[in-house]
Length: 629
Ligand code: COA
Ligand code: AMP
Image 1 (tube, rainbow, N blue to C red):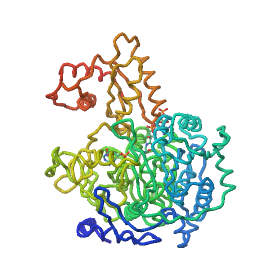
Image 2 (image 1 turned 120 degrees about the vertical axis):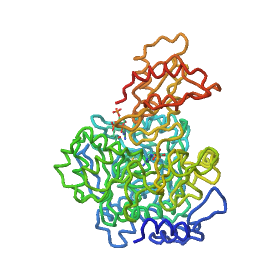
Image 3 (image 1 turned 60 degrees about the vertical axis):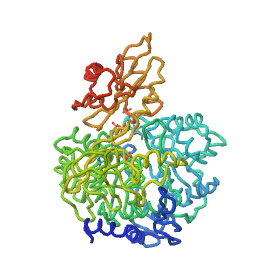
Image 4 (image 1 turned 90 degrees about the vertical axis):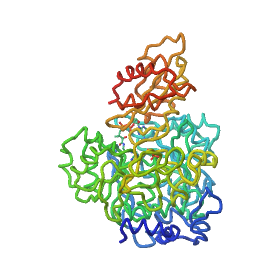
């Protein structure tokens, strides 16, 4: 087994040879002509000329190689009281049948399929079925409202939309069908058909001529085989928040994606085929795409799909119950989940009821892992707790403590070392690399390794403008941080107007766009303010129009409802305050960064360009009245 240093060196000495070797562990129907096609920079393409099929490598391959009877997917749903296991053979049969449904609806290679579904096995089956026939899926997280879904439908222009009657949140049922119908009414791009999975006790009504009943469609379908696709063909589009309300459609390929994920399972997560791997996230996010669906299956692991929450479904012992019951070896979630458990059960009483001895390591990502949370988790679980850093765009970790290559000493507050393939630098505003210990913009030298975004869906220009223009020759991560004298990467904060709420990435600009539609509001700003549980939560500040007559409590109530309606409950927007004016630069730019520092109780320099410094005291007094936890 190579060590981290050896692996890093091998990659540095011969990057293409390194990834070509990694690619040998996958099945290709046609070999590549070039490991890396560099003919059209900055549009680098991995494994050009090769053909493969991601679904074949995730499912059929394991059946062909004798793993058919091994559990591929365990659905554990405390909210419905269900536990169901699919072997690789069963998964193959379900996926092939559902691919047959899509083929029957004339879905072919390159067609888009939007998936707006809860955490049920059918969601993973639908994703794999798309991959099987070369259709491009775009999964939309269930906590998004109709307006957000409509934006994604307009951009992806799907031929088909797949959905379910409802999702289940603690204490309430989320009816998806009315949200879907509303989104389709709002969208200018209309799908030809919708296929709706009716969950138990469902009351979703189907629109004749457009909607099909999932179960009936499967019953009538013939299984479809895997279709070879180019390694460089898109596998999926996943929308993520940028600085405005217009989401960015991250495009992932087939070949590079498989190679990167498979390599990561062995070398970063140290996961061995046959073991149980559990990522407690949602398939609507990148963690769910990569580490609930694709990577564990590619590696021949059993993946767990969990429909529940860390506490309250039914209690703070649910994670430990699942680890014990399914013999989970590798566990991955967001730090916020552990903060919630720690709040409810600080002394780990629930943990004492279960045997979590199967667990080898806990991986945390999605937001900065605070040392307190890591140390608490280490003390409770008695396994290494590994913070690692990644983004929707990269699709897999760019900095990690690579368990499979031998654990490096843990430094609390650091995501450890750059992963082979990611040449991470800290740059100043002039794109000059900064010395060890100095904070700047974290950027990755091009070309990015396999698995990272190819472009933004049908928007090469925005891809270049958003990520590649600021620092020529680099991908700008939009995160700030530093690399210390030992080479450890410390990720400190976002550089743009994106906040991280309970591990969910949200745009403050998108919220401001919604709030400014309120008839009493002249202008507003949304700040991502520190929260002990969710990491950050949004707080809105609004300046009223002259003559507007509305109380702060009433305005807050109305704006909270607007955000819930237009963006969705996951925005966690609960606080709005009225202010006389917003601090601005002399050129009129709102000083959000300074206000955020005030809210977080940090020291802040008075910006030299500020129009009127006295406003900052007014803002501080208002923000002092907000209690986010
Ligand atoms: N469909 C509909 N609504 C949803 C939803 C979904 N799929 N997911 C969340 N929501 C709703 C919640 O019910 C909540 O609504 P409320 O305001 O009426 O209570 C709101 O969106 C905010 O959700 P969330 O931020 O998740 O808060 P929460 O209190 O429900 O749960 C955590 C907090 C920390 C327990 C939860 O976010 C969690 O488990 N996070 C860790 C795992 C994870 O998902 N990480 C993502 C990236 S790795
Ligand atoms: P997303 O694209 O939703 O996965 O969010 C990516 C963003 O989450 C990154 O740009 C970071 O700001 C933040 N993030 C993810 N993992 C970490 C981590 N380990 N440490 C600090 N920030 C992180």
